[in-house]
Length: 95
Image (tube, rainbow, N blue to C red; front, side):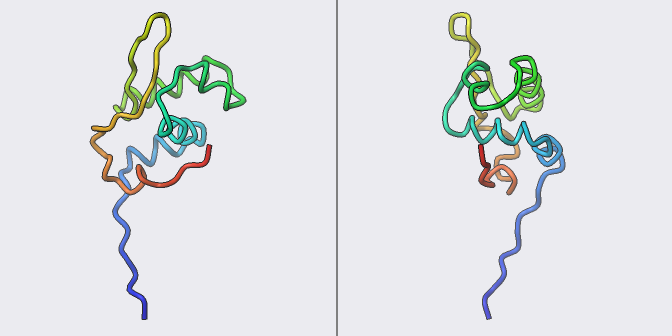
């Protein structure tokens, strides 16, 4: 009989943040490369203010970092995010 692996716990904070489908997709997209709001917007049927709102929420909790380059702000996943060992953070996301 095959041994069933116990899954790690999912952090309630991460689950709540990623519970919003759009945020989950944005995190999946940012896994590929750092991007600005305009680049992210090309892949989603959302307005720039809506994408900015979701990025603001992700940044506030520390999951996303921002870096200003000229007039653009580039967002990337925080590799030192406290919950990076949370099983939810390693799940594959479809973009």
